[in-house]
Image (cartoon, rainbow, N blue to C red; front, top):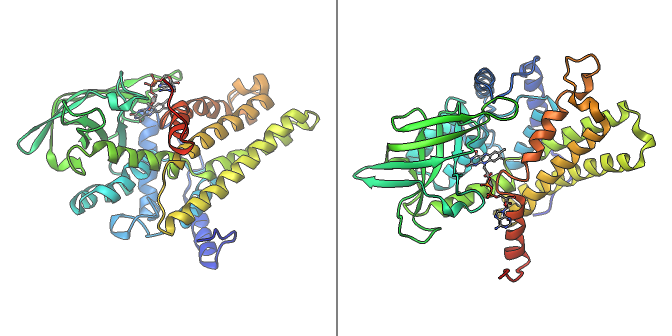
Amino acid sequence: MALQLHFTPAQQRFRAEVRAWMSAHVPRVPLQTLESARGFAQHREWERTLAAGNWGMVTWPKEYGGRGANLIEWLIFEEEYYRANAPLRVNQNGLFLLGPTLMEFGTAAQKARFLPKMAAGEEIWAQAWSEPQAGSDLAALRATAVREAESYVLRGHKIWSSRAAFADWCFGIFRTEPRAERHRGLSFILVPLRHPGVTVRGIRQIHGEPGFAEIFFEDARVPVANRLGEEGEGWHIAMTTAGFERGLMLRSPARFQVAAQRLIALWRAHRAEADPALASHVAQAWMDARAYALNTYWTATRLMAGDSIGVEASLNKIFWSELDLHLHRAAMSLLGARAELRAAAADGVDSDGWLEGFMFALAGPIYAGTNEIQRNIIADRVLKLPRGA
Ligand SMILES: Cc1cc2nc3c(=O)[nH]c(=O)nc-3n(C[C@H](O)[C@H](O)[C@H](O)COP(=O)(O)OP(=O)(O)OC[C@H]3O[C@@H](n4cnc5c(N)ncnc54)[C@H](O)[C@@H]3O)c2cc1C
């Protein structure tokens, strides 16, 4: 199926509808950071507003709170969303990672139970995979789920769980067969966070807010019906989730295209034409954002024709995380010391947001699987290079 480089009249009408709704509903005053309790509540309220307009997750079927839109329409929605400077999606782990995984592996009962509340912003999800001794080497995880009749009893310690400090549920990977080979004997289990035996402890970041949390499971009991897929199939399901995370859903191109436009405005405002090296960085960032958008439209076209995301998700993840860094480094160079000024400072108006964006971009090569690990995957599975000794 060839990529069409123009939008159909129906797609243009869809774009106009999204644009009109966003312009009427996006909060005029930016919300507080979703990493604070108050900001999280504000973002949850925004999710409810989106759901009331039936914009919670446009690609999902109508019975789950969606509009049955296709992936091209989703990309259009994302473009209008970022163009309107709408708030970050506090339920991104649910909507973009668990949601598509549930669509693929969930039972009808699980889909009916979890997806509508996710689309409505009623249940916010966190990802509970990493452990103190299991990050890049996720298969080293030790948390266990022991079957007792129709329940699993969970024990273990998860860490770096984004938004878990205030979220309602997490999707975790637990060892259900302790003696099985590392990648086997794992199960994918959905766990409420406000639940007996579950303790969530926020981790304060450099800005003082708990962007992450540790989660302790001490004999926490959940029904077997909370397991997604078969027992022991957790690794395969988790890798499917990681494919969504790295390959398509988590970082849509609109985010970078809008940042690239802001970067060009910043370059103009700073009259930086005299610095050809800087001009080249700005132009490269804009071109990369555009290339990423075109590549994503191509991926969406392929998926709509029945293809699936494979190992190229690793290439994609390296590209968007390095693009984000590149964009923000160029902004830091333009702003110089002014980058550290806040909007409220006398001379700080145009520095607002870039420093926070830069600090978050620094994490891009780490989360969703580090870029070193993605390069290992590419070396192994794309280039078929021999493994090191
Ligand atoms: C902003 C952010 C959000 C996150 N959100 C979540 C979340 O919601 N849920 C969750 O479960 N986790 C989350 N994480 C954790 C993230 O998945 C881990 O940080 C990541 O997998 C790396 O694991 P680690 O920190 O233990 O580092 P390590 O695995 O200890 O790696 C340390 C360094 O060694 C390198 N390295 C390790 N092994 C190899 C190898 N074989 N070859 C080459 N280099 C190697 C790594 O690339 C890295 O540079 C988040 C992390 C960040 C930064």
